[in-house]
Amino acid sequence: MKKYLVVLPLVASCNQLSNNMDPERKVQSAHDALRSERQRNVMSTDIKCIKSIAVAGQGKNEDSDNKNDGPVYQYGDDSAAYAQQGTSIRLMIADGLGSNWEYAAKMSSTMISYAIESNCTEPKKILKDACSKAGPAFKKIIEEVGKKRLLEELEYYEEKLKDVTNPKDIKDYKKWVEEYKADLEDEEILQLMGEGVGFESHPPATTINIATIDNGQLKWVNVGDSGLMVIRDKKIVHKSIQGRRNMYSTDAVAIKKGKDVKEYTTISATCSSDTFQLQTKDIVFLYTDGLTDNLSPGTILQLINDNAKLPIPKIIKIVVDATVKASQGKRNASGFGGKKDDITALMYIHKD
Image (cartoon, rainbow, N blue to C red):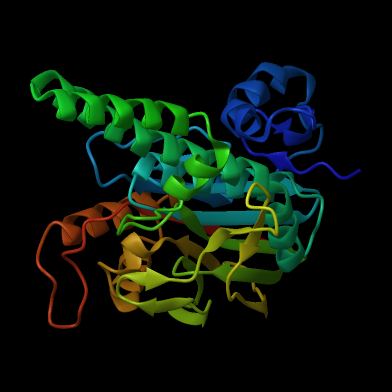
């Protein structure tokens, strides 16, 4: 069985995690488990691409949990990762969607984690494999959202019960409190609440872009408004196609009910894919929409070109910092800037 190796200060295999582990715990424990095992799983061959890849980002909220040490980098509800096995390199970026950033973050990091672990080599197959395995974890996230909403409703009625004096009102509020407590034990109710039934907000989902590079051949698959571009000789020579419907709506990886309401399968909405042959010094730049909503492709290109002699981590930080600044200003005449969002970018420079 192939083992994709995740780049850490030392390199460990994601497959060291038990396949029998609960999906949600598996995602949350991935980083700690990798670190604890890394001494026994150090890759014996030199990974030449470590210095050729960098990730940077910034969560839009002060309470965003920025995680900068891999294997899944997290900035708000954005996630990114990269891995290598032999000559094959895997780059991934995702943007969680939903009314609560913490649950949206779980959606993006879950998809990225399963994409890292997939033994498939083609981006489309990696996406399909990750989707098929992420269903149980996504279902649990949806239930968490439902539970949070029910607890908020329960708290409201418990507080109201303290204030009412009319015997009939007391009876009604007690009844409603008991009903909400019972609903918290009902899996179907939790899922319905988590899906946003009766709410204006939509359930958690995630965009994702998966790219592989093997012997200079770039292959990618994209769902939603995250994406990638290739820069060669200071020009953008290739771009992924964004699955965006409008300013506030995008295709995404989500969940779908089976015939039984308690069964969920993970599905991918409309996706695009392509292949492109890289040349030495080509730059592959992955991003979430927090970046491209605030900076035009031309501005991104200029920032990278103007700082091309700097180390990759510094280049990508300059781009992210410029994006954060633009997001805090006003939208310009070209339609960029002024959109506060989580911002994440991943940059790779190809070397033969």
